[in-house]
Length: 345
Image (cartoon, rainbow, N blue to C red):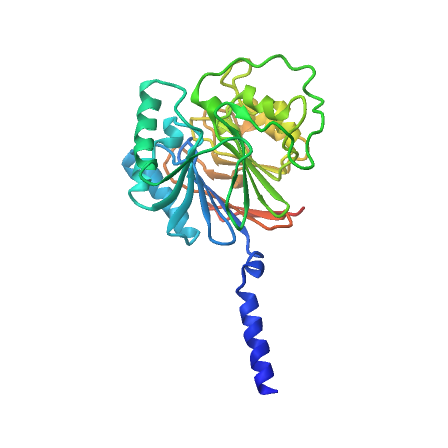
């Protein structure tokens, strides 16, 4: 009897440490304050990590240090994947400094630089030198990344979008028939890698700085993605309606119907009133969180203070953290004030 009890106890301990039961742990997403750029760290239930973008260069190592602080908070000492959505300095600039401080497994991107100016050419050259010393992959729409504890599917890359609807998607978008044609955009923004991250029923979308034409490729005439629980505002909450550089079109935001949106704006970058209003008014949205108070906007186009991670022009570096369960219930936490809110499916 004593031996039977010992065997059963040992079996119970073994089961408690199996990946299947550890998967009850939350998926972690850190929206890191890189002052109007992007850096988003995602850590799955197996401890695997994906960093999307690396913030700005230099600034006294500000952005790499903030990324490393988030990695430490997530209890990881390396990055399995780093995706650069595109080669603008606010997304790719911090890569060299970061790579000198933490081990990176796979470097992923949309392919060659499409905007041959001094800034992006220098960023791409530096990045390519580092990436080709490791494991380097070029992503295409429809690709999936081999994570065990989450799904990561590529939706856009190099100016192209997925060709067929994802399972359960494909509905006709009623906003599309009245839509004027979107202007062409030949910048690196239009080349952005966009991904859908899933964990059970939870769905999070990050489209980098994708502009209107690419957004409409996903949303019109049919919604190829379906709905999401969490939406990172595209292009830092930028909207320049009628130009090739606009993002956060009503056609895609309303089709996605996010329950919560995170705006990765800086104090004086992004956070445009027009984009803020579209996201704020989208059907089913419960809350809009911001990395910064947008000082160039007005009070009516900033969310309530408890939902904002950084309230002034100082480089305080507070992040927003999301803890997601496979049921699609998730909690958002403001590191500045420890305010948190749980959103149940």
